[in-house]
Image (cartoon, rainbow, N blue to C red):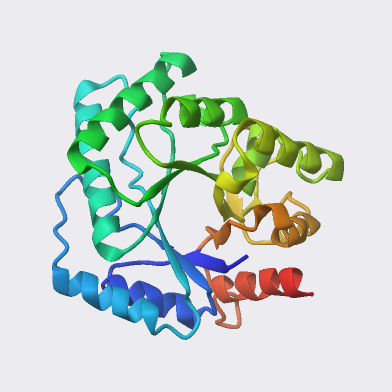
Length: 286
């Protein structure tokens, strides 16, 4: 399993790869445009070619995945938000296509009090509209598990499975599991039996081969608090052995591991990105 981090495109797409290389990453995750802006982003062919060439020649980074803007909420009760979300998601998928990125991680969205079933149907309707704008692409949309706060959809595998089933003829859907989110949602992955039950449930309801990304984050929040609070590996409530188990689990062989831990420096000036990557590599390879 490749191990990587989320990096910034503020200096350009190629700079995101260079940031990953500097931390020893084997993969990077990026926002393909400014995360918290509705403004349209145009990617030139020159930018795209430079990015693809930079990835091909990278010393350590072998894969780039995209993460959707946090503004996107296809499940919203606000028609304007849904319309803008459809346009923004379509734009991001087309940017992914031009950059050669084939995995796009997406939060399912929040139903804002209308209920999960209504929210999921809104997601499906929104995906149909996105498909109308993009046509066929090779980009796989990986729906991310959530902690469940604020009406978030995707805090149970049943909800994720329902989205995948209903979107089957619309998009090429997959899954991203996030350890901190699973823990916050109540999946006690610290328990070996519960972890095994989780993987079997993923396989029976979704297909474990559809797990394309694993966000490996420790959690500041306690189990089942429905809170999403990321922490550095080994410093939170998730036992470090869990990360070793995931990295060595051959059933998750299609997945890429991405850290989304706080962007902080240790007192000695070493970035925690580098520290967390080195630790995960030691767990995977040891």
